[in-house]
Length: 192
Length: 192
DNA sequence: CGTCATAGGGTACGCGCCGTACCTTAAAAA
DNA sequence: TTTTTAAGGTACGGCGCGTACCCTATGACG
Image (cartoon, rainbow over all chains, first blue to last red; front, side):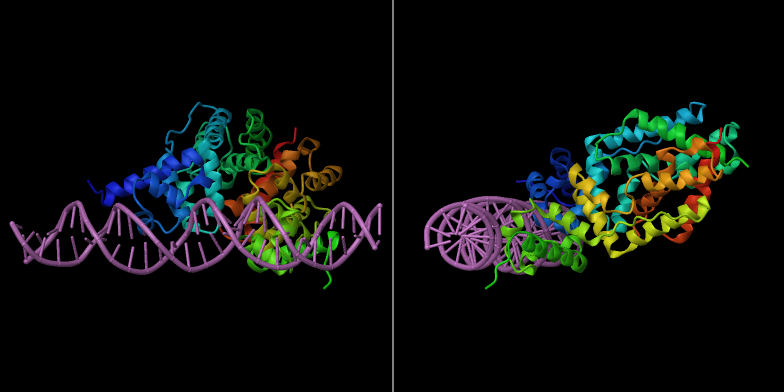
């Protein structure tokens, strides 16, 4: 019988872990289940990842596709709403639950934490700053508003919706409220 | 030998659980360890709490003292900063770590979630609204700013500091930035 | 083409903790 | 005192962890 090695095996294990994540969530991701599903044994898994959390993060990254295009509707409000809706969709999906569990599991491991965020919807402030920059260029927002903390406020508030309300999704009204009641007034308020 | 019953035993178990929490964190809180420390057995524990998470939350609540007094310095900025600093202190303490682990563990249990938040530093929006109300009364903030989402923005942003940066505490500069760069401009921006 | 280091496969183990079951025994209620 | 209630003691099966050991296919190298 053919015996897989190196990258091929690593790939098979990651795939198995990813399948396990989608099938049973992070709670169901056990080293033994992954090894079984990959048709191998725990040895091969432990040689590559030190534990559940690391494997989970690696598998999670295989499941996510970081979106790269930045909305450019010509309206700051619409751009931000669009971004929020994308993130909300992603966080509402089964993958969102996985991501939250993963975040909790890796809470004490900065390295893993960074890895999770990389493949995630709120990857840094660059995205949000770009949207804001365009608004400034259009004269829609004052230059003083160009601040990472300002730019990322919407996504931070959205995350809070998930944390505080235990629900798996945020209603669209909440997104609109975040933009209209907080973000836009905030941008305005920072006008010299 | 004297055998404890009812409330006395319940108290002993809770105390043991609380000790275990402070000694080893939520990770070290096991039903067996608690029973051992309380000088009893798992039966007595399971008769009262269905599992680790519930027991953990109950023990956590015994460890927290909800502060009730609301700062009233006469300045919105100072009031909010003071509240943020209190929360930051609490979240930075060993208890803060316990609380975060607990939140993660109870993520799928709305009942427990509510219990945790009750004894916690960010207990609802009432506190924050009061501070904002006083500022409005002083003419320091426009009445339009009187909105739960606005009032709680600082604490939401502070929570985000903990989530995104893996560090166990937020620097005072971050608090100041939240107030000066976000909260105060936001309140201003909502002026009709 | 044979040799050999490498890494996967198979298996078993000890550990810790979970949650449960069952019986005995003390304490409180009747 | 009798009866009911609840604690104590103990053991169990189950699961997943992480590790150790030895066997064997693979691919590189001489």
